[in-house]
Image 1 (cartoon, helix red, strand yellow):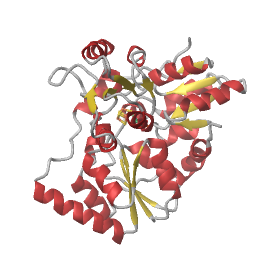
Image 2 (cartoon, rainbow, N blue to C red):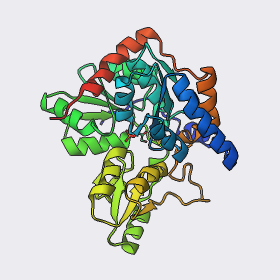
Image 3 (cartoon, rainbow, N blue to C red):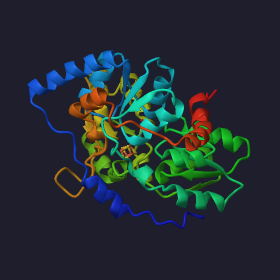
Length: 347
Ligand code: 13P
Ligand code: SF4
């Protein structure tokens, strides 16, 4: 199979991740003052807070209590797009803020940090990816939302994990061959589900890449009644262990719907906040990575999501710093593929 000539520098990406400065831990008093301040600022500034399930419990709680929203990357985009607030504050990573801006040029889009990257986005520089696409002009270019605005502008479709299989199925049925980027594991999973002809970019998520199939198998023996929930950014052998494979929302829905009392979860552990809220009587076990204190780079938590702290959130609301901007020519091109994602209806 042809893959891209560009060599992804995994080491450089991992060392960037290792050097991320997480939001500081706050005293109880400081935390409660900031929570009150943020709620007030959200009202004053006609803003709405949209948070991802991987952000801290404070971000998720604040989004919910202030009339905002907590969800997966697709529904975050849909919610921000349909809300009347003049400012959208995105607690998540940069591609989520850029997607909000692509869809809402007339609104101000703010983030607690503009340095909240994503290893998939970093693995897919636009020039190298465009070269790859140019070598296969007959193929439809489908990219994961975890990419820059420039890469989205080069694509025909943008998808998230909640619709990726259905979109590729739809394109495959129309006889289209696909270029997929940047997540190789998600691409491999979609290819197996749909049988589509796909060329895969070779990026990966530093968090999901580290879940270990053998460790999950051992846990299964210890908890034979547990269901295994896996996000499809995980390696193939990990996905093979799964009872449910799906987007963050799909995994959260599974804990409510399934009768199991124990779940082994292979995705970022920020998701446990919502899972415990919905099914507090159930037990959630983090799928093993290399083990806390060992050599793992992420230990089941995205370092860039961890940058979303209360102090930074209050500061961006107060001063308007960390505003997301997207070059207008790029935005207009990217809107075409992003709008297809927003409008896609699997039926
Ligand atoms: P979801 O679209 O499932 O929320 O995933 C986004 C993401 O970055 C997962 O690592
Ligand atoms: Fe990117 Fe992985 Fe972090 Fe999601 S968890 S934002 S895919 S690095």
